[in-house]
Length: 468
Image 1 (cartoon, helix red, strand yellow):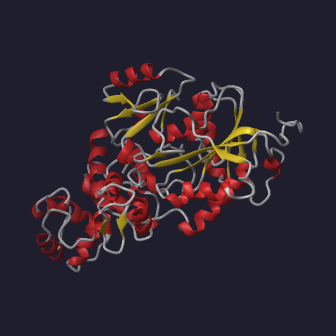
Image 2 (image 1 turned 90 degrees about the vertical axis):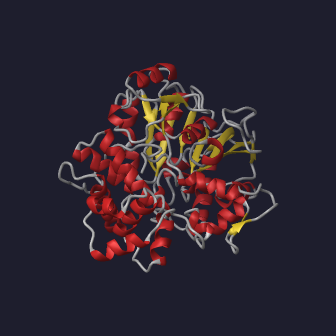
Image 3 (image 1 turned 180 degrees about the vertical axis):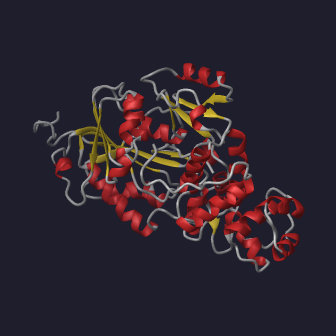
């Protein structure tokens, strides 16, 4: 598993901790965590993070546990297919055992040394032979793609969902679907965003390297640092506890930069969550102006407060969006210079960071998400002043959540005053009118961003002045 793209502070609703005897070993620990996830439905990365803190685990042991978990989780569909082919129940324990045999290529006696095996387990493990992928395995299974997403990924990247293979010709080069999906199977790097309110990237990079980490500037974000080590106790990273740096995927950093926020402006982060992008916006604003972090989830938004303090941000306000009509927001119609809408989405673009999310969905079905996204975009658009900027973003690769959603908005009554205005130059290459990031193309999580501008004219929300 991997650290979140944006790390939240500890919270009262954290999962219960798995307490194990010292020296339990990576395999039994991984099994305990998988069993707890199966019972609770909690995100595996959260369970691992709390286990690490409660048991005072350091890098070497963490790396072994993480590698053991990742083999089982990143190969979930393929392991299940291989087990079912033998008539074996694909339980959490059996998937872990199979991952040791097929992914790590352990011999059966070595597996028995790590976990006590019964006769039946010994028998089917001996019948399993590497490699993990074999003849007859469907392409969707090989690519670890859930049934709900498979037809949409085929439509987006040129696959044939009926035949289970890639199409030749068409709008995408042959191999595009598999390349995109294979990239989503790989582990994500650990990216940091430098807090430019406190220092420079060069200074932060030097401090991190002095501490013994292998780190490089991110290829696109001018404020990003990428660590080569992935299994890292975050408290050991220089600057993280002091707010000089923050954990944030490069793609998320680029979305915040796409907003183009400037010092002295009034900026709204409409779906702020725990404030990761709000922190980036505050730094871009040089801590001058007004920044409002708004969200419907009061608990998550509450976690932003200590992060603002740690980062030295004092221009940020928090607002919990009320269900139905929100009077506070209604009074700020056509008020903000810039509004970022990081809309609730399928999260498909972050699958490499949270691979268990493919199979344990924590978001509504797409049929429910699409009207929700449209409603959120419509509400947020009403808050943009004439001449102001609206940025719609998701961490998805699916067109119906991305450009198709933007197209429907522009064709609506609320979207009639807006037009697409992609930046003339940006830190990462644009795909036509949009910022479209993917692990396969850019090495960061999958993100989508569209910049829209409200045309001048009409009444401004600030004192009723008419824009010129």
